Length: 231
Image (cartoon, rainbow, N blue to C red; front, side, top):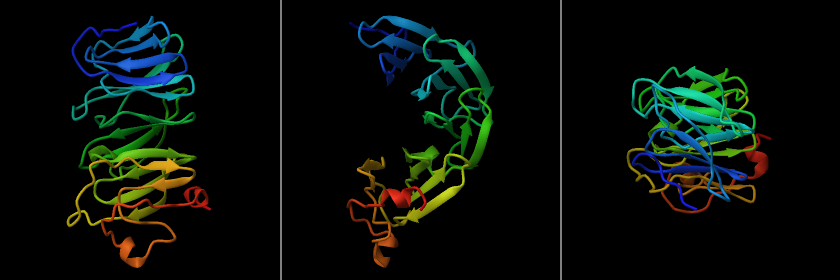
C-alpha cells in the first residue's frame, strides 16, 4: 500500500500496535492501519497545525499544535482508536519540540534558549502535573525515559535526570566544558542492559576526577540501574 499527504512536507511516524500515527506537511494528524494502509481517522484544527511527532500515553495520543518558535501553541489529547478529541489546552509558551510520553505522563518542551521549560501533563484530562526549568531539551538536547526518570543530554555538556512524578532533579553530571569542548554530532542517550551510554566524557561512580571535569573522550559510560533509580 501507499499513502500520500495532502501537502508537501516530511512525515513523522509513531507506531502503536497495528495503528500508525503520522503528521505531514498538511498539518493534520492521521492514523493508518499498518497492514492495509487504510486511513482510520484524521484529526485537524482550524487555527493551528500539527508538525511534530505525536506521543502515546496508553490509549491517549498527545499532539502538540503550533510551530517551534511561534508565539503560541497547544496540546491536544486524542483517543487512539476513534480519533476523538478528549481535551485541548493552551500552552503557556510556544512548543520547542515533540512531546515525550510514558504510560502515565506526557512532557512537553516549551520556549527556546532563553527561559525554556519542561511541562508535564496528565494524559486523561490535560491538567498540569508540574513545570521545571529546561536542562537543554529546547536547544538541541536529546531525552531518554528510564523507569521514572527523564534524562536530558544537553549540548552545553551536562546530563540531568528529572523525576517524572514531580519534576525535581534527581541527579546531574557535567561532562564537558560548554566553551572549550566541541558538541557531538549526536546527543541521543542510549540504554543498554541497564547502563546508560553517552558520547560525552565519563560520569558515574567509576569516573576519575579528570574525567568528571569534562574531558572529551568518546567512550561508553555506565551508571547502574540502581543509580538511575536513585538508590
